[in-house]
Length: 261
Image 1 (cartoon, rainbow, N blue to C red):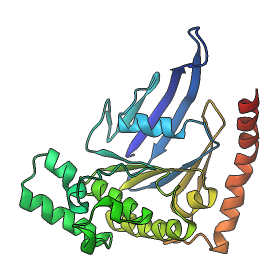
Image 2 (spheres, rainbow, N blue to C red; image 1 turned 180 degrees about the vertical axis):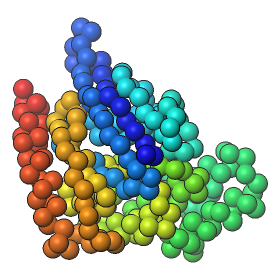
Image 3 (spheres, rainbow, N blue to C red; image 1 turned 30 degrees about the horizontal axis):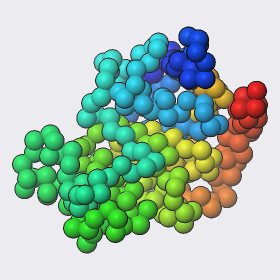
Image 4 (cartoon, rainbow, N blue to C red; image 1 turned 90 degrees about the vertical axis):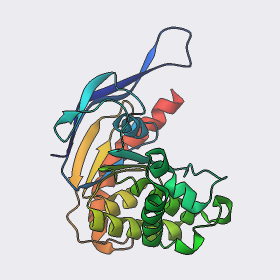
């Protein structure tokens, strides 16, 4: 197995109390991801999906539990795991090509070599003619393509994607969903994709992990055995959609109750 998460829990100190009170964000997470699998994580707001991604990326530490990658426990950040955020986090003072090259530059790669690698990934993203543009000149969908290219140039083993399409219009979102599947089919990288969108989770994932309301636990693992590339309008995906929705309904209600209590 590529990645194993064992008994992972995370507590945060409450900001709403002067006392030493803690909030359980995630609790006893156990999951196994095979080599080359595309996994979706879906759950109600505040259930700890992003917390889990941050821990997997090494940006945060768990209170309990361990993460095993390729048979070795990981602790901290590393080039084998790259995060793609909802906000693209591009550098506005750099050109597109410079943004894509940035990680390679930090890694010490020579200019000619990093330019060659960056241009190849921009071609994959159909952004070659925008290489010398600045971020403000791009649409939202194009910015996310640049962010994805910047992640892929580092050749990570695992892409961690935190609702990267959430701020896009539905048409752009659907187009990027297809493009991401095509990239995955070529590279066979592990992708862990967090989303609030049920159909998006079904359309993208080999597996969908459904989280409970806070503290987040894995309520159900659902396998999506359907051909690719998948389109959100495919009627044959609707039974999977209904299955995920059925698991989520009570959790969404519980999350709303937590907010009002």
